[in-house]
Amino acid sequence: MNKVQLAADPAPLIFDRDRAALIVIDMQRDFLEPGGFGETLGNDVSLLQAAVGPCGRALEAARASGMLVIHTREGHRPDLSDAPPAKIQRGVPSRRIGDPGPMGRILVRGEPGHDIVAELAPLAGEVVLDKPGKGAFHQTDLAQILGNNGIDTLIVCGVTTEVCVHTTIREGNDRGYRCVALGDACASYFPEFHRVGLEMIKAQGGIFGWVSDAASFANAIT
Ligand code: TIU
Image (cartoon, rainbow, N blue to C red; front, top):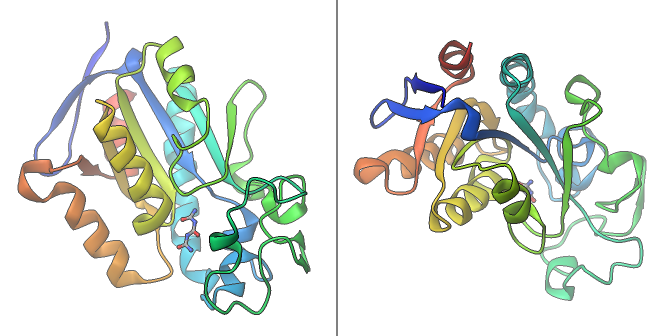
């Protein structure tokens, strides 16, 4: 038992540091660097850079305290057998999932674009979870991993705020986990969606979670 208090909205959160995990969502080259999936969808990928430093600070604190660290990556099998046609065909991107790009095939496992950005590279022993969807629980063994480690609190950061971070927090909340978004360690291609996405989590008394920041997280667990 190692109770800590985290400054958060809508209220401070007390949790057991030994039963918390840091989940870093999809900080992949495909979303953060030019030529990847994010850019094919028409986005300015430079907007996501803001989350890299705060994610690094959260990772550093979690590693120093011995907290379970999980990195997720969104992507698909090379044969695309796990990619729903409805996902591949969505929108009018200039290049689609599975097509060749400057960082290899778009959103395909094993390709350079699928890698986590160098600044946040996983360390040996950290969990790297490949997921085919937006949520980290969908068609993955995340629940098994969290259960085996006695986890009841999820500290979540990464990209994008209103897509994969939100979906994962919503999934985690419904499964009974306390879920905290580290706001400055999340980012979106749409600054307004980032702001409102964080508001949505903490509205109504924290309807599906809490919002904190990387420095408060580091302070709480150090
Ligand atoms: N497009 C977008 O905002 N996000 C995604 O497609 N995936 C994640 O959020 N990781």
